[in-house]
Length: 139
Image (cartoon, rainbow, N blue to C red; front, side, top):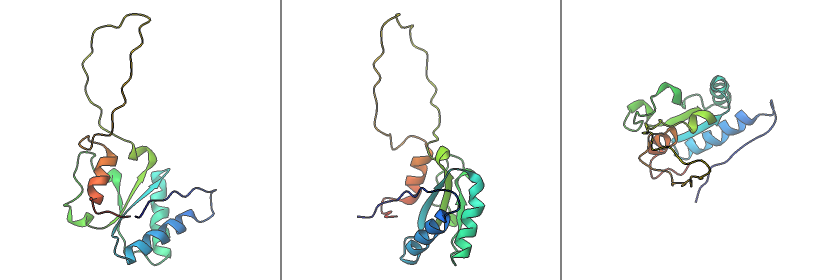
């Protein structure tokens, strides 16, 4: 079973080239979709440069911020393959739900918080990317 990876190191040590190389190898092996998560949208140009420098310039680098969160990405011809670039902050983005205010709580009474599992139908960037990758994704 394949898994993702996380790479962290200091500035200027070649993290972008290493990520580009791993993604390029996956493309050569037939895995035509990937997600590049970075700290800043300013680094998208650096990611494109790294892909170009290793000979992978033909791989399209899509910017997630160019698409609305509720937009379905699969089925868009130009998105059939490529790398989606996004930031960590963008990855956790979700639409806010409107909630009605309930009755006032009594002072001193603690409300129990219930943690619910991720709803696969919730409009979020993570679900948007998961849908684009598809069930057979083995990135």
